[in-house]
Image (cartoon, rainbow, N blue to C red; front, side):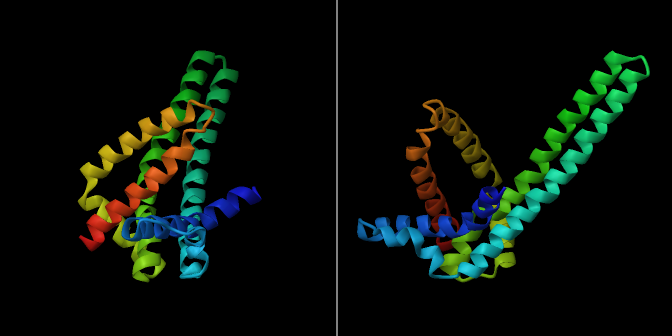
Length: 189
């Protein structure tokens, strides 16, 4: 639990460091290890606040999904106890499917808001809420491109996970490069 908490809080800080390294690599052709920790030196508080908002958003989504799934499973069990086991299983599974769809529908806007937020806070000195709004707006304006990008990332994540997750050692730097390139095109264009 502590690791999950730390990961959510530090994700924007570490992302800012990776973006700084990608920026420096693109401009100067090399980067230093210290660049990876640049988020701890500049705008650390606002970056952690982005992580707090991200974590709080997933907490609310998780609670809603658990309430829906738990209620449907309880309803299915009650129907099964009442002598209709087939209907009870259908109610339970239906609720779980609806909870999964709800998780995707509520999680997508949260991910859209957080996608560019670390870059906006770190490079543009934006306040966390303003960065989240700007990130969401940019994703909405480029929804088709971001949808295609997201589907490609899902496929790449599948293949990166096949060799016991070792593919992520290659995929993650590529994704940070893609994040910086998209940030640069959209916000610095």
